Image (tube, each protein chain N blue to C red):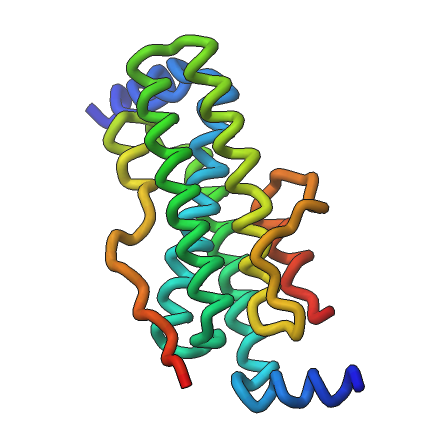
Length: 130
Length: 62
């Protein structure tokens, strides 16, 4: 059994495309950021103000949309469903990045200038005080 | 002027604490990204990526 388990895991992992894997990783990172931001907001370790409230709620809504779209893709596996996921991820990206602006003098509700989609790095860049 | 606005911001939440929290968010996001590289992808796994369902407490209005 100890030899079979890794084999089964490999087969399971090989069964999904690179795109699915990358999307799964991206959504995992964004969930960690959003849930962490919510916990910090409730603990008041980030500002408990309207701007933070709006950004986190917007991020939660965008995450829900993207996850729902991905679950639809998993059942249909169509190009159309994949396009919907990609569009939802494009919406989610700048919203999650804007969590890094919480507490700055220019708390932003939109960040249209963000191009990269690598969440951890985005959060790292955006947290710099402006 | 810029210092003044920054100072007002510090009055609300200590800046060092805020930077530490945001840094922790980035670290957690990266850890989640790395962990997801080997997590089996199933419908349940995607379902688990839905955000915390508990509504946020609205900010106080003064």
